[in-house]
Figure 1: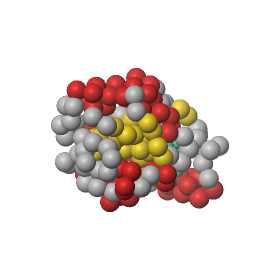
Figure 2: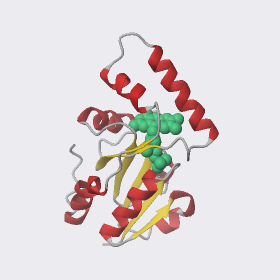
Figure 3: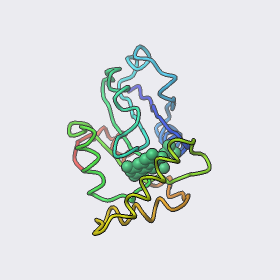
Figure 4: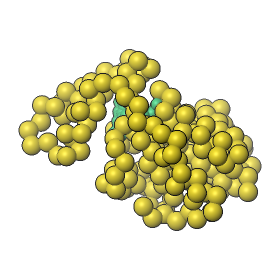
Length: 172
Ligand SMILES: Cc1cc2nc3c(=O)[nH]c(=O)nc-3n(C[C@H](O)[C@H](O)[C@H](O)COP(=O)(O)O)c2cc1C
């Protein structure tokens, strides 16, 4: 089975997970911007990881257009890992038929470029102003207050195990 990890990362958390996953699976990790549809066609199994922006997995649409044979997706965000986050991401990113994993990343204001940083601050402020915030909104206000790193190598275990056993169901 020829495997490849492809990723899109803005501040490094997804890149770090991609490198860990590739190491465990003994394959290469390549950045999405350095890969072509012709290259993707050479692999039986592509594991794609993208960072989350406003609930959308960055780079996923571009990768899908390359028609990978067997696609596995992981998303890296700032939120904590719970069933709600995963199922919302699945629906929003049309991943009902695709094996999908959520990996908790972090926030790095230091490594963020100007526009994403502004967007995040604006999102944080507008949620903070809201009355009757949902549990998820309360969490976002706390999270968006400063940089943190919740990435841990052990978080990749379910993905690596499923890929190695080729047990790629679409369940949670
Ligand atoms: C503009 C913006 C929007 C974001 N939206 C979300 C979001 O909807 N959900 C989430 O969990 N994280 C969100 N994040 C946080 C990033 O997904 C998180 O920092 C991730 O770890 C970045 O990965 P990277 O280092 O690979 O770029 C957002 C970050 C930015 C800058």
